[in-house]
Structures are given as C-alpha cells and as structure tokens.
Image 1 (tube, rainbow, N blue to C red):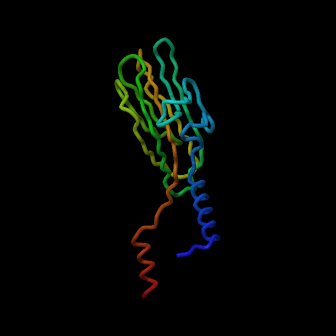
Image 2 (cartoon, rainbow, N blue to C red; image 1 turned 60 degrees about the vertical axis):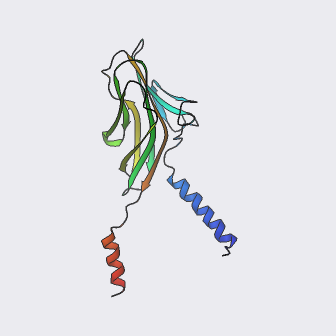
Image 3 (spheres, rainbow, N blue to C red; image 1 turned 135 degrees about the vertical axis):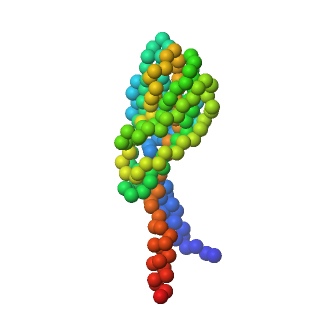
Length: 182
C-alpha cells in the first residue's frame, strides 16, 4: 500500500497535536527543577533519588528542627464532563526515629488520598486518583503532625494527568445503529 506524503505528514502532525493536548501536568518528572511547581516549607526538588532521575520531596522533620512541606501545581485537565486520571509514583522513606507517617495528595474540594508507611521504605509504588475533568490543583503534603522524634521524606515522581472523555453507553449507540436499518 502506498501512502501519499501529504497523508503521512498529516498523520504525524495529528499524532503530535494529540500528544501535546494530553500533557496536562507541567514538569511531572521534575527534570526541570521547580518549573510548574510551588514549594513551601521543607519541600525540595532533588537531582537524584527519583524513579529515575530527579523527583519532588516533601519532608516532615521533627528531630532537632520542626518542619513540614508541600509541593503543589494548578493545571487544566481537559474539558468538564470526563474523568481526570492523575497518576504518580511515590515512595515514603523514614530518615530517623521510629513510628509511622502519613503523607498524601490533596485535590480541589479538599479530597485527600493518604499514603502511609511504618519503618523502612517499601520502594516506589504507583498511585492513580480519578477526579472530574477541568481545572485542578493538587498538593502533596504531610498529614499527621502528631508523630514525634522522627524524620520522613515523601518522594513523588512522574506525575501525569489525562482527561478521559465519557463514552456513550452501548444500548444508546446500538439503538441508533439499528434505527438506521429499519
């Protein structure tokens, strides 16, 4: 089969435009430092320790100093009406002390998704959170301020969001097709 150069160029351009439209989160891999992210308190972007490469780090420090941090970003996740699927890799590391810690993600409307660990890290894990499409602000933070004499790091990497448009229900679709042939 022979494809015309015009159709090939149009196909490549359409693929590039579709990819750009699905990129909702800016610098989700933290390779460009803080670009796109707001950091407060004990939050940082590291050049290593990510999954792989750079990553965002939110700390809860309570031995010697007391400090918590947040990393947040506001972005548009497609047009209203669909489901915004936010995915990210996370890791919780205990630096000093003993006990458990709870870190997590907060989204618009105050909904929270906690991630907890006790003792040594379980390694990198992936999480998916589903929200309505439209404007979003996500914040990675520490939730449990009652822990004492311990230091923790919540690492986050590869943050991405895609708006999935709703699909017509099968009965409605098939009814319309059947009606065309009656």
